[in-house]
Length: 207
Image (cartoon, rainbow, N blue to C red):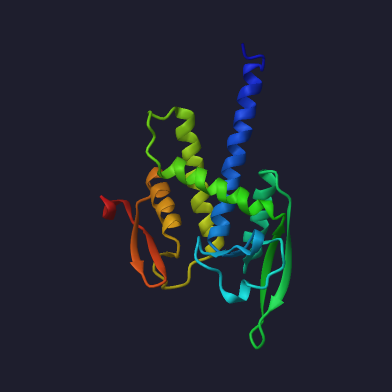
């Protein structure tokens, strides 16, 4: 017999699902920018080796952004998932100066986000063996929304005349396409040098 009251079990389950959604969005943010993680393992844009500029980043740097709003959001999401983090701002460049926003956290956060990504990917892109319940469908939609929110926040406003959204990592592009379908947002992908271009199509064009 389960001695935990039903209401408490429900509340605990909702908190857990909210935490997994936050962790997944954080993972998407990290995959969409250059990152340096535990043990010298470096990634950029979802799996490829990081640029040489990141090779000497100090221990504890999880990601670097050129927009403070993306760095602040990552810190907020990590906090919601139970991992403390902070933002360090510095100025880089020589002739052309620009600001970089580093997110610092404990080394264990890298592995945590890897697992969050794998679970979110399975929930969005896997084929369930059994029909999903209404709660599972709602959770998948929340993951879909968080995926697009994360990638748009990391990429920033689109440049004038720039077609679509460039995503270097095929797995991330796959998640965004599946998430778009779940949100009734038709997305098409074309492969270009350096990655994939995702285009959000008008409903009538996608029909």
